[in-house]
Image (cartoon, rainbow, N blue to C red):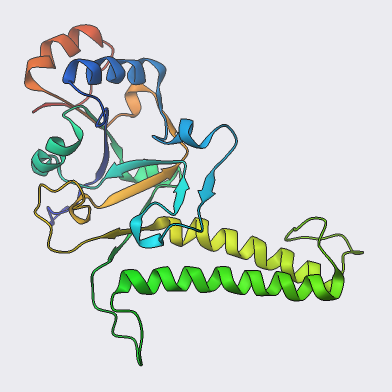
Length: 253
């Protein structure tokens, strides 16, 4: 029996937040339902075969340093969608949280970038700055290790977590460190979302209340897999006519 009402049993993705009007969003929405495929919003930006891009020149706390092919959902009860709809549009598609978890969905870890850094001793003023410093230190260690190994074993021909037996010891260590750094960026840094405390609820950068979950790449589905569809009230009749095979929950907003 469910006794809390501040999280949902469903995860919802709203379609077409970057489009200019509801008619464009509706065309995209029907295309998604027809094809049975929700694509990661940055799939085209990264290019085929690329799952993550890391830019060492950008600060981690800007949410721009690491880009992964992720499909995003919100964990918000349907009766609390109003602010989210203002930001991302009124066309949504929801799936069971349990079903998406089986496909690899996980919540992001939120960090207040402007929270005070209370680390012992002299240091940067905010937690966001501390995370930026931590990533920069990881990059410096990688650079120093490369320089040290290069001086002993020469420049590596390749770097791999699992190296052939003939690989020089320094190159083996460097390969393991390189793989570890990539996994830390992918499974830790890329799953952190920084936000600024104190922004108004309606502010586009006020992420915390979205309780975002992410799934790698995209999500293939059938109409019967859908837990709920959200459409504007003035699109309800049109939607039922255009997508007659959908017989699940429909919430006009």
